[in-house]
Length: 500
Ligand code: ASP
Image: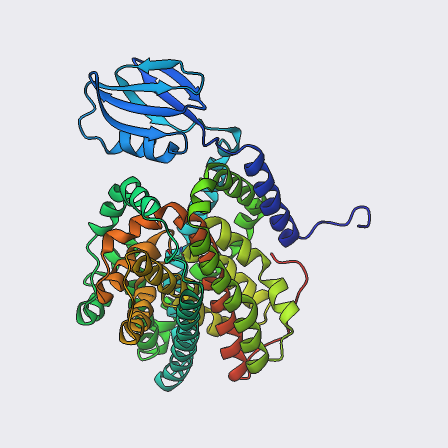
């Protein structure tokens, strides 16, 4: 590189991501160490052979050397912690007894210490997301001028999103049928996972999501749009904004102009803000990835390797095969150039696991780099962020098949077609924030009669897969944006120089 040449921001972000992976790996949390608090004293124990939980002196639960998560969760999930003691057996035959324990945790490392910077970054992006969706959709819908035009662009957008969702779910089903990730899980592993994560699963199941299409449609209409904005209910905010945008064009010009100028200004301010926030992205991405890698229980990944590989392979196929094919079929943009512009989008989606937090970046990139006019980007992207989740849909299809296979269900064609329908709806209903895809999976499981407690089997790797599935979720939005702008003859020249 020439001396004095500035490193492009997207390159810095990629460097932050890679450095984060390396740093997190170097300072990863050890799976054979525990920090136990008792009587105000912290004790670190490591390399145990067996750990017994005792109530007074009687053993109530035994764990072996590979059960760090189980040991921690057992303590968390035990309601009555009075007289709870631990007896640690070491391989050399010695024992250590710890009485009156008040916490059992992993031993933290420096890999996790910098995470607050990453948390601030995510919060800043989330802070922008709701006002941006509101303002840009109002302006977007209003600037599409008449109802016919909105219906045309809206129809194309929803049609494109439906097409990619169907491909994604079918891909997930095909891969799960070929690779059969759930058919090889030993029953002991199944029991162990179900036991370890049963309480986490229950918390999610208690959120009571259910598949009732009528309720689903009714609930998209906000009773109070301000409450929807406050709660960050994206579907409701989207509907409200589109309606306001449409009807703004039908009131006298001098009145609508004032409101439009207001929201236009708000939306531009948010975009300006994101350009500045992105300056800390390389460091924030570094801290987020370092903390996740450091904390992630890689031994659980081994247990769920085939399942995780099936999901990741499916996500890779839609991202690097399907999307380039669609890009070629519908536009003249070079695949390489398209992906080059998507680098910051991918890095932010991967490190935050949130399409909503990534939206400001996606908007910036689509308008400034991919040459999509504001009126199309500000309509297609917020809508896509909310309803278009190919990665999540594929993941839900594979996860449902996996859980069914572990439980020994042989799903019929009709049941698999039910997955296509319910996973499409579940993905639409998934809020664009971390971890919701897993909760909405419960709907898919209910529809095919597979026990919903089965989500306990996959919770351990959900964070990692959430990071991965959020990437196609956001790339598909950018893709739809260029495809629709191109079909309207409105795509300007692509610019692949530095972003932001
Ligand atoms: N994290 C995903 C997103 O924001 C949603 C999910 O699948 O949980 O796109």
